[in-house]
Length: 549
Picture 1 (tube, rainbow, N blue to C red):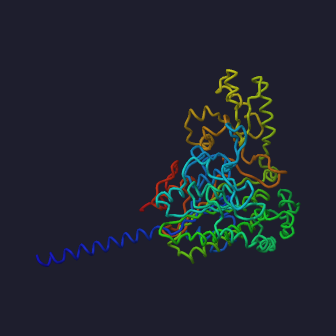
Picture 2 (picture 1 turned 90 degrees about the vertical axis):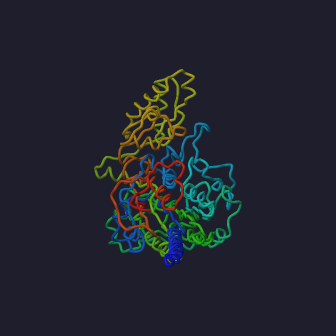
Picture 3 (picture 1 turned 30 degrees about the vertical axis):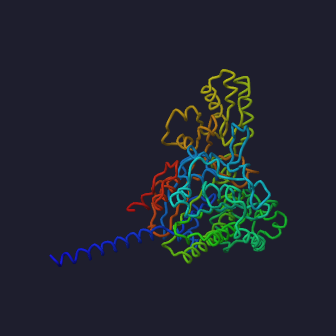
């Protein structure tokens, strides 16, 4: 009995030590730094298509050593940059978070607005209105907001991108900072939403004249020409030139074009990715991210793939060369992260905000149905139809393939709004390229669970969206420049299917072809980081990453 009395305190002490060690281990499971990478206009097939030409330490390191969701899709239309970035970090679709496009018609203002414009803000680091921006139109929190709330603001969040919207929405409402590039100066700027003056590390970075050095490199193929047999011939009629030029073949003399076009040229060339990565590293050092007591979050959006894709299209040598270079940039950044923090202390995910269509003119020449939709012409046709059908122009705007009707005039004329919507929907279905339509009345009265109707509904916000929504036939796009290059916006897989790669401590290696939604990223992070889900979350945690936690 005495032996048992002596042993009991020792057992309790041992139990206490083991529990403390378990608690310490749980704390160590939390990453020091989360890095959310969004590639602007990256189709999923850019992973397998160039797989054999990528190195082992960049995209293939994420794919082979991390976890890949090979069938990740956006579940809504329209697939634009602003709603894409917001959906990733808000864990929901435009119907909830309210960012229904890059631009849209605002009924109350009676004009088209830009998603992040905020004239109550003061520009910081510039005199340009490019600094008058904020996330104030986003209706929900983001996972970055929730991390800040969960740690009582001990976690630090920074968002960076060349594009303002791609820095602002991922960083959330409560970010310590969001920085984007002023195209006139090439410098990173912000707004008074975040701070009254640029931090010293940003001013130092802006003063290093990196763009001029990058432009001096020019742009030529990074590999021998034989490696580019997966892309079209260099000289073809389906590609548009860089700004201010007419040349569409390698090599490009960027130093000369820089003198003509200025610093904004870096957006349109692969060096824009190098510049973004350099700034990401400067942000980590300047803000001491990953070095505090709580998990920090850095969001990075690479915008140059989008600018290049719009000009040259997804089958161009320019886009292939850009991705081969981007792969090396990712390798450089991953090497930096693991050297600074160690593999187990980082959590990285990489995805995209949308894909892109093949160049419609090229598809037409191959005998594939495709076409161009002229929004301005259709708006005029809708106005003429309204005059003939109702004796008055009821069309306020045609924006993002949506008809905005003058509801006050409809009420004043004692017209039935539901019947008016149906008449416009019927007319739109007679327009070349239109595949289908839905009225707001139908969207509000029904719950669609599959097909194009469900994608339209998930992209429809009852306050901000139009009265009739249309979607186009596959490979039809809103008219894009002079029928060279391409764009995105549709509900089809070439625009909706994107990579989703996870890497870092606690992430298993593997892949799945199970269909998942892009809105599943944020709640997955919520479980990984022990935070609440974003306020409008409709996504589900990815079981492959969180089961057993």
